[in-house]
Length: 92
Image (cartoon, rainbow, N blue to C red; front, side):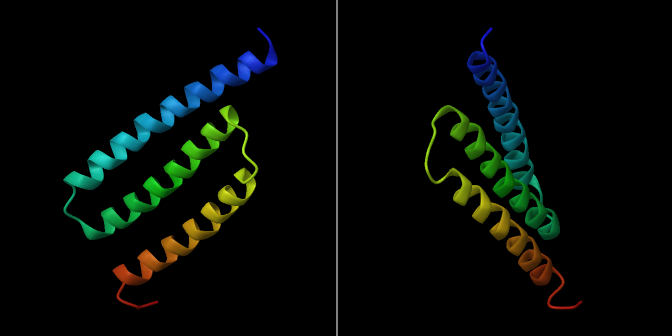
């Protein structure tokens, strides 16, 4: 097995695992009634989509992969802080 084949198999397996996790989180987000849980789940959905993009970028090399992942990490942290502020109604 060549290194390229190994990379394709492992990145495909990682993509399948991320898709299964994403579907489970989406199901939980739809069925829950708690706003705090929905905020946390939306953050998990965002990060799972970033992980899915990273798995995709292993198959199809793009020139903007680094920037997209960097922005996803940055905006993921900002959205978490914003959700926490909204849920706590501005209290610290």
